[in-house]
Length: 368
Image (cartoon, rainbow, N blue to C red; front, side, top):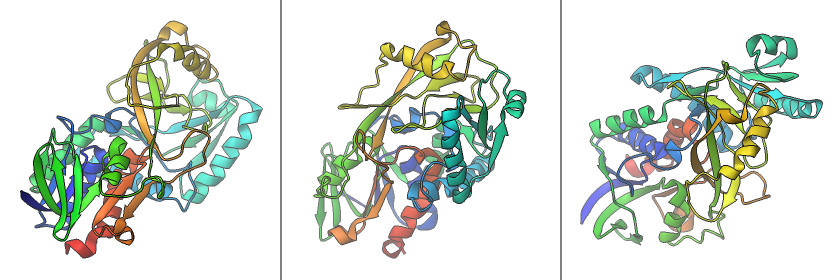
């Protein structure tokens, strides 16, 4: 049985960022990443809008806001230092009718409290910025951007290997036992002993928490899968910014995003599902067309081509209110050195480096 100081479960963007930060912060510690898939970032991290968010949607005191605002700056600095492809393109949240204006006002107040740089854009100015957008007003988030998420993960993966981190793929964790020597993890017949475990297992993070004996219903750790689909736009529309409607209950609304490969896409929608399934349901095409046509009047039905789908690991179920990230070192629950990262949905990509620093602060007394 191999022994390490720290085991990170999950090689999505958050798990990679955590391994990178822990290797930097605690040199000399033996660190291993355990990933069930054959490559890093095959689930949440590669099935999203690839947006660098600014942090305007959530309460100021929440981890989602705090880590997003910090992560936005850290991510831009990281991308510049390591030449990760990105662009600070800006985002417009548009009001298409008078009923949307109070929502924009609320977002402006919340974003300002959170420290986000926002500008109110009136109709005439909006027409100059985006002549193909139909709206009566908008908020401009200057520091929202786009990123090549695979490029980011490849960079983080390379840096972790350079710092001596061991990455083990095709190794799903099937059992965890807390012993006097640490945590014994079983991965398909192999065993690993670790003093510290970071559960960054994404869609499986609640199941990993249950493996170590936590009652995920008692502690509010059970995940609810929320599916989102994307449609590609072909041909490209003449749009210069990311364009969002006012947010919805389960997501940020069907928006138009640009990627760094010259593509455009609409999405995601949001609906809860019982199992992980990435198939597109093309009966939803009308929903996309209707939602986007409200602010993209030149959009044609044939412009929408099926793209891809992703699953968000939400802690709130259908109709439930806001839930924050769970980032918890579980000593008080009888599991010293076990750190749970559960419900890391958007803005998890933006927040990944800030989340990693937060995790390092939680375990610093165990890794000095």
